[in-house]
Every structure is written in structure tokens, then in C-alpha cells.
Length: 264
Image (cartoon, rainbow, N blue to C red; front, side):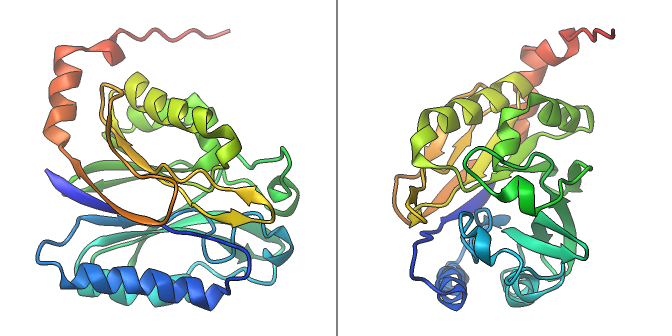
């Protein structure tokens, strides 16, 4: 059993990038004072810039080991835990990516995931950014983790591929709008249930460019039951993950082993 801390950050118009960093560091400072440290701390998608601030994407883009990594890596080392640093607009000229960073307990970069499915509906993301091509999975002392970003939730193939790679817990960073809250809840539960895996998501709250964010970050167990859930405002949510529970459910109800592959 291990704990994950979800920082459901408010991202609102009028905030500066620096103000958001300072707010995140306040939360990390609070966690430093707690006796029990989490295994992982999560942040949402493109939180430093604000997902819908497309006009700021290129100006606030950064390399993989740029400002976001530099400011959060010392905290990962201090807290001796992983930090899933949400996502950044990564600059690798001539391309830009929506890239999720995972910082290891020693402060080094454990890995990165470039968002595969870029959003185009009432969004400029797919016009500005380049999609990634690779699924990112990491074996840890806590289990095998898989990582995805927001719109990926609508594409079950990504998650089934993770399961083929041994994943028992899926982590999702997001900037999901309130207008599609029901979809958010449905996909969180469905992706967990159909893969008999834990799914832990960290969403933004607040409002950017007239778009209200859904909040409602959550942890869903392998039966598709919501184990913990945030509200609509800024919040620090604690969730507990039991990898042995995943093993037991998969053993008792071996649906994954019954899957048949159809090829055209």
C-alpha cells in the first residue's frame, strides 16, 4: 500500500506563471512537514501556462530539463518521492510537444511522455503541437506505472497496450473542461475497469479563456469504483493504492486472459 498526493491546482486568468510555481511550492512545503511522505505527487496538464492559453505556448515552451524540471527536482529529492510534474510545452525545434515529466526520488528525470492524442475540438493544441509516438511505462518498487494525458482517455488502445506491458496503475494528467464532466467521470472509471487496473487522475480547476475546468481528480480501483475524489475547487487529495488488490482481482476475475485478438 502506498499514497499518492494529487495537487488539483486552480489555473485562472490573471495569474502569472511565477504565481503558479509559488503556489505549487507552497503545497510541496506543506508535504515536507508531514511525517509520512507519499510515493508520488501529481500535478495537472500544462498548469504553468494554462491549457487554453494557446497564444502563450511557444513563448513559454521549455526544454525537457527546463524551468519546470529545475524547480521541482529539488523537491523530489527533499521529499524522496516521485513527482509527476504535470505537463509542459516542450520545445524541440522545429517541434513543440505536450510532454509529461516524471521526476525520480533522487531528483533525476525518470522519464517523459509526449501526448499522443492532441485535442482539436475548440482547441488549438493539434495545430500548434506535434503528437508523440511512444507509450511510457516505468517499473518501480511500487508496481508498474503507465502514463497518459487528458484526451488520451478517449482512446482505449493506449491503455490496453500499457496492460500488455505489465502496467497495474495508470496515471493521467489533465485539463478537462467542466462542460464534459460526465465524460471525464465515465472514462476514468471505464479505463480502470476494462483493464482491471488502478487509475489515478489529476485535473485542473479554475477558468482560463472563458473555459471552466472540471476538477474532480480521482482514484478509481480495478473494479471501476471511485476510491477517492476531489471537488470542483483547488484541493490536495490523498489516495491510497494497493497493488496486491490488483493482483487479487486479476487472479479472481481473469477477464484480461479471455481477450481474443481479431486481425483483418
